[in-house]
Image (tube, rainbow, N blue to C red; front, side, top):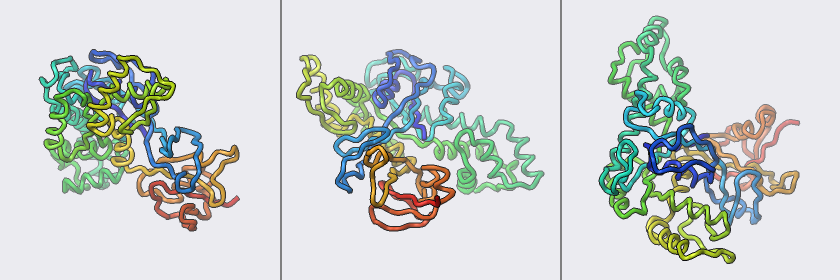
Amino acid sequence: MIIGIVGKANVGKSTFFKAMTLADIEIANYPFATIKPNHGIGFVRIECVDTFFKVQCNPREGFCINHQRFVPVNVIDVAGLVPGAHEGKGMGNQFLDDLRQADALIHVIDCAGATNENGEPMQPGTYDPAKDILFLEEELDYWYRGILVKGWEKFARTIQMEHQEVEKPLAKQLSGLGVNENHVKDAIKKLNLDPEKPISWTEEQLFEMAKILRKMTKPMVIAANKIDIAIAKENYERLKKEFPDRIIVPCSADSELALKSAESKGLIVYLPGDNHFEIAESGKLNDAQKKAFEYINENVLERFGSSGVQICVNKAVLELLKYMAIYPGGLNNLVDKDGNVLPDCFLMPENSTALDFAFKLHTDLGEKFIRAIDVKKKQTVGKDYPLHHLDVIEIVADK
């Protein structure tokens, strides 16, 4: 699974990415500071199941603090897009192609309206951030449309002449975007199209199909960044009313980066996603630092409940993609050969079964599957058992 960080230039995307990953990247106040995509590791925050067993886990990957488990996910940050990106403006085709591999997107916008359409700084409140929401969706829709209609007439005529149904070959043609056969079937059904006569589909219908497929395969969380600037809160409230069907999260990437950086230096005690922090016993903040953290506490954490960065990641993975956190574990033993308690936690897609989890752990476990055990319930289950978020599953396989 890969989460893509997108948006126009100079809205704080790279700061958001660094706040997520603490990766060492360039951050600058000018358009196209990012050219090549940045790759890093972010984390989904979940309640750890170690509390259920009254133990302390020892993660092999990620970390667990105060029984809050942080499970790693791959993140990619591409360069800022500009209007006309799908036509190649601002190296747009290259940047869009970088997003092919993303399963979900976090769209960072300047909620303070302090960046124009070309990514150039302006006075806060002089640009409408609603335009950014629409612009990026439009660019992605046109990008999908361009890929869909390329060679369409020949493709559709071949399908019709050979009396095929279009779903499978079309899904294969669009597989690079994450489109599968079920996506195509759903889109055809929504648009009431004849799958046996694709040559009859109009340009308007193809564009509508591109929009539907984009929403299915690149679901999006909107990070309303720079929320600590006064005008941003007013804009945020307006955006929620204008776009009630979007997930919009108030964010301050600058604040999250400052908090994480201070925590990594031992100055404060802070857990990503929390609505508070504490000055560390050994932490020595100078007057300027104290003033900065007082500002963050008052204008971000207390007002909005968090910096928003961790919330965006969680919503992308758990809400949009509907992934579940599943732990492997034994009914009589939660410890691996090295003495680590509940060392592993895997993110599994919606509707995954016990057999899917066995294959996730190892091909041999899947092929030699006998049964599974729901460790929490102490109950034997079959291969078709539907997994649930925070399940602990033991796989029993033939030796």
